[in-house]
Length: 119
Ligand SMILES: [Cu+2]
Image: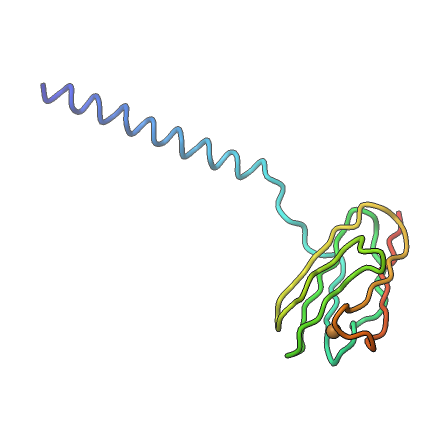
């Protein structure tokens, strides 16, 4: 009787271990987010730097360093960060080459900035 209980708890333990190893395997398959190829600060009502050059398949990360909210919005909305509050980040991966001009939707006086994506 006692042996049966031990046997059953061993099966339960094996089951839990199997579930655990499955979920950790799954986590390994999920691609880890790559570190951005370029970072842009939104600071003093400007995108700094206002031009970044990256290669296709890499990403740019924006961080709002101002107390005011800002957006990083491509002129034809290829990407749009939405409103970023202070220290909030937005990143976008560029899978196509091209020159992407973007601005802040909230402040029309902010200078348009550019991401240049090459092969
Ligand atoms: Cu703004």
